[in-house]
Image (cartoon, rainbow over all chains, first blue to last red; front, side, top):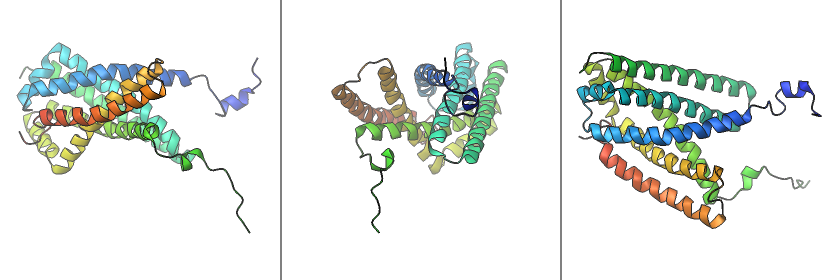
Length: 128
Length: 131
């Protein structure tokens, strides 16, 4: 039996029983990004001089485009979880905090969407 | 009237040591990498917009300021990667002993500088720098 009132929980004065999902999601995306980040840097190194035809040919490969979409989505998610913790820790004023958190969320979702659409456009477009 | 001795918030009188220095560096590198994420999207969007847009984006990425940011981002990536793996080990309950944690902390700091410098030398051409 809980001694805390439902009102206290609702007003944000304690655990809403959702914290572990945030913590766990950050770790899972971190493991994925270890692999995706290393893959991306190695791919860049293999591309050599970054001319347009080489980048398009690279993202035309099904594996490359799939991993690039994953990289964009997982990196945006991981950045969102991390920036949220930083903002919650250092921005004291509640109004500013909510505004900054919303701005971060909107910017990351928009950027992730642009990134995914860009990869898909190259992947599904004409070969270079 | 003498000021009464009041307790200070912990962060006001923690002395700097490797634990909190590495921890705040992890956050700073994470914030920097979040900024670099937008550069990645910019690069992908330019590539999807055609050769001319891509050439323009590469010129923009080759400017001294963005080159500085990209080099910093590369070091931040190496540090965040290595220290992130260190923290995943901590989360799994591995390497928590003080001596081990100190050793892995030094390894992460030195490894990030070495790995970052090597990655910058290899990747400078791809990131729009001197080819």
